[in-house]
Structure formats: structure tokens, C-alpha cells
Image (cartoon, rainbow, N blue to C red):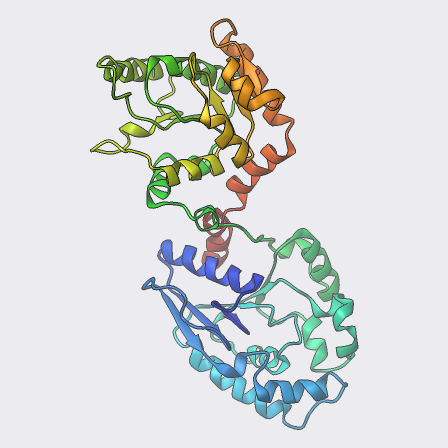
Length: 404
């Protein structure tokens, strides 16, 4: 992966390189990050770092040439610097099969590097195009209708061009005269674990249960006691999955209550009900995930609120109802029993139901309609399913690298 800079330098392209490198390494691909500015940023044994200051956009020799280039003059030393760049590239790329160059093909930050890259013919080239100088008015005063500036709009032979959005694909296709369908669109993404600073327990839970691919996540933060009315949650989930034909899940966080000897038996009843309803892969009692049983700490509970699509709280008795406040702070909708104490804390901003008289199918329909009508809920699901880095790399980048 080649760019003018790499982490720990901060920037969108630099962040993309870091996420690509980590996800590729986790999938068994050896990665070498090559840049003019940066440092080793990950200790994974399959991620190497190669620093070549000449490749930086702010190297003194590059800036000296750019001063003349921006005025439309091709400096006498341009070809000599290009030759130095090409020699440095051959050293940096030794042993590599593919070179993914970010923006080098389309930006004028280091035109000698752009020219030198065209001399390297013993690796496959992928031009990752975040930005295009020739379509951006900001760069218009620095571009001229002759070599080397026109290299930025001339397709490099044998190179696969990739853009980060449909908008960029249309711009690039028009600029270079390429068929749009020859240009894959591979978007940027997000790493939920890093973004939310997940605990190790949260990372384990999410991977073990494959939560990020779910169509809907209902969080029920409660101990396994009868007054929490967890059985209703299972019936509602069964109705919700049947109604929507979607992969809704219910996450129950707590262990059996410590003060009633009958509570461990209640867990057995809930497990039997889960099996009877065919929800073995949809209702997750976190307590049973590990041996010894998993006791979820406060930080992991906070992570679960950040990931969930809604709080489902069907309790028959509460003295206060802290989960309503936690859900409010996390910004997720609350579907809860219509108890006076929950009305006191939630007011008109929760979605109440009578836990003893309302049919599970009616509650399920209300949940489905509310979430389907919420732009923030729809966006949350789309981001976690389609725009997480691990999914993007596995489903789009690796197939591109492994294609003939």
C-alpha cells in the first residue's frame, strides 16, 4: 500500500490504509505499507512498514519541483527525480505481488512519483482514487494541458482503478474515458470496536454471536428473575421474526438473580422455551456463553447499548427502571412495560405496552413499524452490516486482490 503518508499521520486516506492493512492481515495476507511520512503503527506480524522520505508530498526535493510545476514549468531536474523515485519504488516493492497506490495516480502532490510508478511493471497495479485533481477546481491553477500534468487523467496501462463512491466513479470514468463498469466502487468504512472502544468481553460476544450481521438487536438488560418477564421477550421476538422475515435478536445480559433459589430453574425454563420457539440462534443469554458463566461488566453493558437498536424492557415490577435512562443516553428507542415508575422516568418519550394483556404479535408489530419508520434506526443497521471494515475487506477488497 503506497501513499504520501501513513499512520500515525492523521487523515482519511491514512485511516483507510490502516484499516485495510489490519483487516487484510487478519485474513492472512502479508501487507507492506510504503509511505514518505509515518511510522510502524501495528504490531501484527503480517504488517510491515517501509519509510521512503522521497515519496512524501513535503520532501524538500519534491517541493522545489512543485514550485516550478505549479507555474506550468517542467523543471530540468524532473526526470532525474523521477528516476530516483523509480529506483526507490523497486526497492520498496521488492517481493510484493500487488501495489495499491492511494491517490498517487490522480493527485499532483508528487508528480515525479506518479511518473515513476508507470515505470514499475513487475507488480499488479491498483489505483485507489479518493480524490481527482483534474475535476477539483481547487487544483485548476496548478494543472496544464501537457506532460506531466496530463498523466493524472491518462489511464496507466495494466492498472485497475478503484473509487470510493459512485460519484467519484462517474467523475473518473468521464475524465479518463473508462467504462464505468470497469471501475469497482469500494467505500470507506468504520470499525465499531475501535470507534466505541469495546471491551474484550464485548469483542468476544459480538464475534461469538455474529451480532453485526443482525437485522435488529433488542437489548434486555436484566437478571434472570420471573418479575423481569423475560419469557414475554422470547414470544415477542418469535412474532417479530415471523412478521418481518428478518434476523432480529434478543440479548439478555444478566445471570440468575442471587436471592431466590428458584431463579436458576427459571433459566432452564427459558432455555426450553427458546428451543420450543426455534430461537436458539436468536435469543442470546450472555450468562451461558462461557464457562465459568459470563458476568457482564458496566463497560460492556455500555457497549451493548451503543450497538443495540432498541431497549426491550417487559418487567412486571420495578422500583425505578434505570435501563430507561441508559437507553435515553444511548439514543435508542425504548419499548417498555407500562409501569408508573417507567412512565415517571420515560415520560412521553418511550413506547409503552401492557405486559400482561398485550399480545406478543401486537407488540412485535409496533416494534417493527417504529424501527422501520426511523431513519436513524435504518442507518444504524445499514452501517453495521455493510460499512464495517472487516466486511468491506472480505467481500470486496480481497476478491479484487485475488482476481486474475
